[in-house]
Amino acid sequence: MFNKAPLKIPDLTGELKESLALTLPLTHYQWHCAIKPATLFTIYALEDGLHVLFNVKEQNPKCLCTQNFQRVCEDSAVELFLAFPPLKLSPKIDYHPTLEQDLYFNFEFNSAGICYAKYAHTRKNRIPLSEAEIKKLDIKTKLYEDSWRLRFIVPRDLIKDKVGYDPFEPNCLFALNAYKISEDPKIEHYVSLSEVKVPTPNFHRPDFFVRAYVYHDSPLS
Image (tube, rainbow, N blue to C red):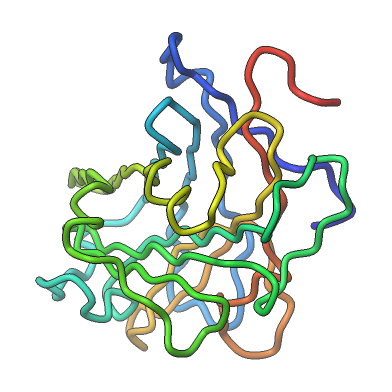
């Protein structure tokens, strides 16, 4: 993905029209997929942070977890991972996120909005968001006959507090990946926005995230 230009996430502050948001399909079906739910990932910025929407074509999604920090990845889940470099970087910089260098967050949800969200520089010993911080994500879900959707906010103040600067300012580089997943063998699947080129399932790989930045009015070319 690093040979491609960074994703341009539109800042819709003052002109909120979801039709102007960045919407991408998750197209990389990886490892073992017992089912292949079609998933759309939508993202845009407002003054309060990044707004994220997943639309999943899936009937009766598995949804057994009822408390935050239960293993929603064993239900039918959607996930957003974000990685932030230690200093502000321009989108023109040849930035390659890594576990040790970058602070990365994993936001994971089932179709009821039950959340598993942590952050750290490594996969192990990750720091959980507090219940108050999870509440600020403003998670909303809706079930339909043959699909479901989930939306949430990545709060600007939350990320700024953890990272030490505001990575959602225009033209400030970070990295992300979006996923659809279930580890339940009956419906097991691993779908990603940016392909994770490793032999066994592991989404905790910032080195395969795609670079991104928020723009307003005049995106960089």
